[in-house]
Image 1 (cartoon, rainbow, N blue to C red):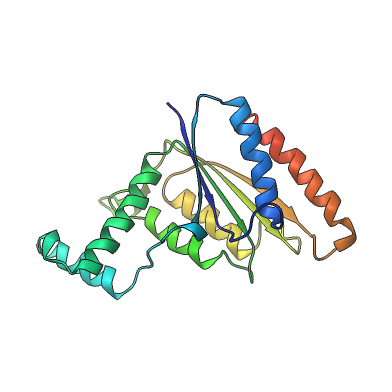
Image 2: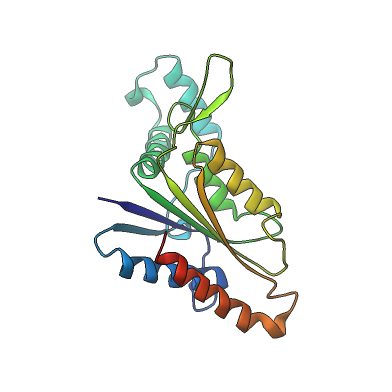
Length: 207
């Protein structure tokens, strides 16, 4: 059965957030079109997302040297397990939707932490005999939804980063939906969002 993983990276709901409002329209349309699909709707601001810190790096080093998992510290065990669960959850999904605002020309910090959990050597990419990276997540389909105050046409650092990561791990079936220019032209903001909702609804029927 097809599973769609929706990763929201905004602490606010669609009542306030324009990226979440458009995402809500997409997922409502997708669910109506695909009632038999499994949809896991998650928000990174409601979850513990492990950062790659000293605990994780020391734990991975120890495990790589042959240290049994149960000899790691309690904190290390917890973080290694949590990190691995995010990786496994991504691998179990057929389709992935990432939705976020553009903050200071970048993705929210929690989204960066989540991205680290899906960019894992031996899981989502490997190195070939020439030392070149080869993506392993070739069976997946992805959509990136992003809202921004200015207009960038997919050339801002955040959207380039998201696309680069997904391409790096082998996802070539990659789609983008941008909601742009609301702060540059605030008088047009309601119409910009309304048009994006229409586009998101249409995309939900075909994604």
